[in-house]
Length: 476
Image (cartoon, rainbow, N blue to C red; front, side):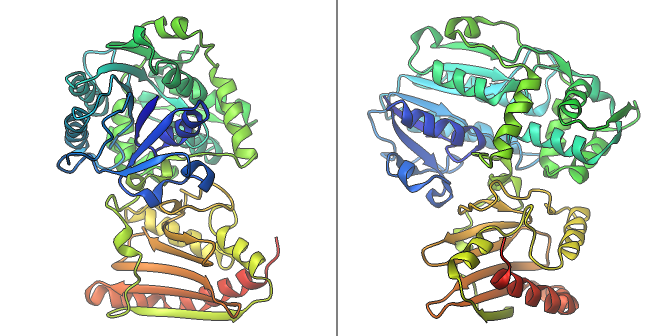
């Protein structure tokens, strides 16, 4: 089958893509920026990539006419607290218009469970998208899921942050809300199982795991699996706004995502039926086993995708290609260089920067800068990195975003997503003479930006000189 995969570089899309290719399907990946599709060269050679931003006015002739089926995996919940529902509706309408030019027979949509009359804004938007897609030219198959549990999923990473960092939690009343978590492996099984399955055309299915748990029970189970001590005290006085700030400061989530999640956590999300489970003969994975499977991936460094690599998990939701060319005029710079002996080892150090490895010098100062960034509404350091020594363009790297990662050219370029009065780049490059160059570039915004740079100069002097020295000489 020829399949259109939207949201191909998202958390679900990245898991689904290699399995569709493995099953022999011809896959067309619709992405806003092809450079951000974090797949190896072997997989990239087996797919076709089309550049589409479904928020923009539809363009004719972009999609191949002979598409058989399409996955609609586009979400905007992390991007804002105000207009994400409008963006999701616009994307769905534009998708319908573009798909009408093709012979597509089926659209598969992953939404959220909506079994209460009063829904959160997030779940209302999911339902609205579902209604819009139902008006499209192809038969619609809807899979409604609650919390998805897997390495790199937003829900799993938030629970992980909370339980690993807080032995004592004073929590809001939404921790008593029930939900039905589902393992990412089951989600992928369902998404593949309904493909081309005519009995699922124009049908809506709830999908969930075998356990119905409160959020409190989910955290307790996580702590038990990880052998952590955890005491949870829930209080009725914590407002949704306070709850959102609590999630934002303790976990790696963005504030818009925290707000939307808290709004949804007051709503019970429990499956109504098991029709699809019986139709596809899928064995649901218990919540505890889903956690254990997630940690198998983490411990083997096999996390395929993470919600944190999405652009909407950072400060800049637009295409970052315009930042690839580092400006020269109106900028201040810190340039360091050092001769090296083993370029392969040094390149490995560069590609391993951030996350658990840290920044090679003054890690305590980097952490303080991360805490300050969180306090002023930034992303902080908690996003870490998805893989310990693999980097793709568009990846999140602590409070930086990877703009260029070219191992053959021996060059890594990062763009700052921290809160700064201007724009900042950090570049590493090994030249043909085996000299490592490290350049921090800052384009200040007004007098405040220049004052910021000069106030940070003493720290820059020690941090940047120590960083390049350790990158060039450390062996791990």
